Amino acid sequence: MLKNRTNLYFKIATVLLLSWLAYFIFTNEWYLLKELWMIPATMTFGSFVAGFSAEGGGAVAFPVFTKLLHVIPVNAKQFSLLIQSVGMTMASIFIVSRKIPFYTKAILPAIFGGILGQLISLLMGWLITSSHLKWLFTIQIGALGVALIFRHYSGGQRINEISTRDSGVLLFITGMIGGFLTINIGSGADMVAFVVLTLIFNSTEKKATPTTVIIMALNSIVGVLLISMFGEWTPWAINAWKTAIPVVILGAPLGAYIASKVSNLFILKALLLFISIEVVSTIWLIPLPNWVIPAFLGVVLLMCIIVRRSNPKASLNRTE
Image 1: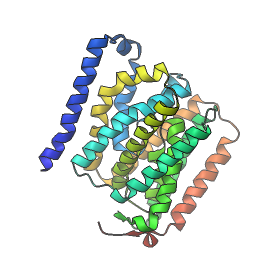
Image 2 (image 1 turned 90 degrees about the vertical axis):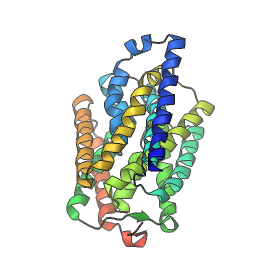
Image 3 (image 1 turned 30 degrees about the horizontal axis):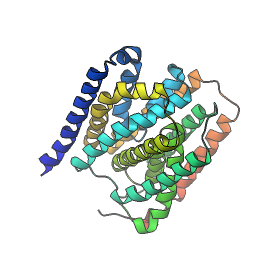
Image 4 (image 1 turned 30 degrees about the vertical axis):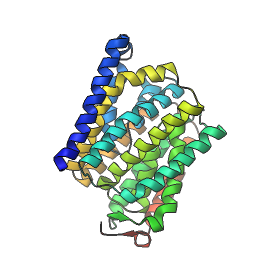
């Protein structure tokens, strides 16, 4: 039975790869691979990170494209959303088919909240378009890195199951915030869910990570559908997406597989390394506005307070 379930991913991956190949043969769009070669090259690493950690592929694509390749934010945002709808979905199929443990009870509340968050943001026009976007992204994951270090050295028990009855509202709100970020920057639902799971519910990084992969996959699909119905895709985002599809079909599930085989501490160290690269690259490449340091310290303080005051006994139990 396990073998049959595992084969499900490989069957779907084979169909998608053959479909991608057939599309390029019939449309003769091979020139896109030459013109946009940096896209699949970036996503070779980005897709692995998407499956391996809570950062997601968009967390690699967005900063690389906007900082190094000088892609305009709307193109980077849309590409991140499109490519994660493929890569994270394939990683999710792999996670489920391989029976990799994740918090099943966290999925539905977070997804319903994500749908509402994306709808509100898209329909009301609350889209982040300012130049502050790059720094807001960095502040978010930089503060998470500091909080994870704080929690690691402060100790505390880790939990293996979430009670929907006690935590559903919080997970729904988490999904709303994550959905707002997803529709605005093409990523973020996974990071917000990871913050709540690890800092408030005291879950292990190893089990929280596949949970956030599934949440991000479903949020990405919702975002793609909403923009297709109420918005408009840029030609650059569509063409870039075409070039990177085969890379993420294989890369994201590989990251999920490796994450399931290594220790919780290894995942934590790898996540902190990815966060450090993001923060350092932003400081190096982007001018530092005056408001960034106070905002960063404020978010760090908030997350550390959450770590200190979280009470897992109130909403979680230890068995699964």
